[in-house]
Length: 238
Image (cartoon, rainbow, N blue to C red; front, side):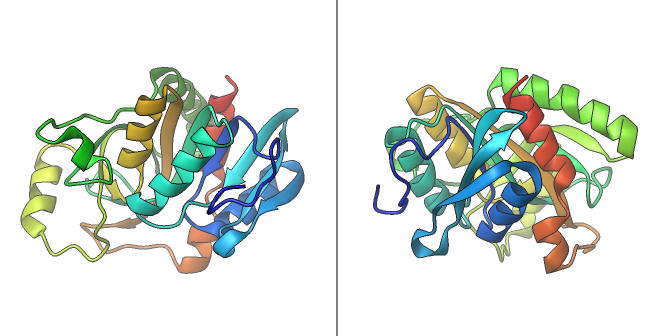
């Protein structure tokens, strides 16, 4: 047990999927895992462990923002031995060709700041995905896209700790430089994975569009992201 995770030793798998929303963790575990068991509910942050096609998998919520992601990723890695960590979450599109319900694979992350910023001081560290996971997710995503007609994109995203951002000039520059989407956790996950020598990837469904104001309702944000979860699981065990 840790300060934030009540699971016993051996109850967390080496492969962990990380949605921000604990209810999405419950939905994904009940939908995709066999014999899923609740292993954590400290502070209402739900975590489940089961199997997917015979492989042990934990799906554990992280909360919103990089500080919360940092807490759970640190403890999962240091105290429970997580080796592969894949964020499954929502993001807001920053490019017109990226549509609501499309899937984005975060190849690299831009950020104005993270909990790790004080470690690097003047260095602008570039958090990037594990290439093997990224390639496997892209291959899996192409197959699913061909079957179901979803859009698939791989490239840079922006990780922000400000949900209600009023920096239109910053959004303009990200759009200008091809940043695909904005979310709130991946940069810190990638940084921690690099620090501890683990594999990390962020696979996200576009839930709203910054340019057009189109958005999915809250209930669909929780339960309609099956393509994203399937891509993440396939990549983890490719």
